[in-house]
Length: 111
Image (cartoon, rainbow, N blue to C red):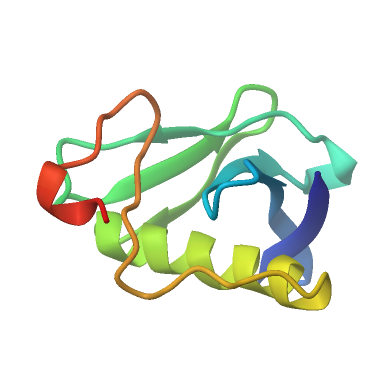
């Protein structure tokens, strides 16, 4: 598992990401709080994919928000790709399935 930090606001790094390769061209990512190197997995609250995605830490509270799930997914993909590229691994394609929490992928998004 490899980590990278991103999303800087007012000079503070708010979010980090852990990327774990599953060995079959799939990856698991975990967004975590980067305030004071907290490391706790963040919560993502929203009222659906088109709604604002609020990101908060169980310890530090609200960290940031994204306008919709696609923006959140693109943020995660770009940060994860920095790690994958650095390690010489295949990067995540822009059209790849993006699953939040225990959500199941749509059949049409799977290869």
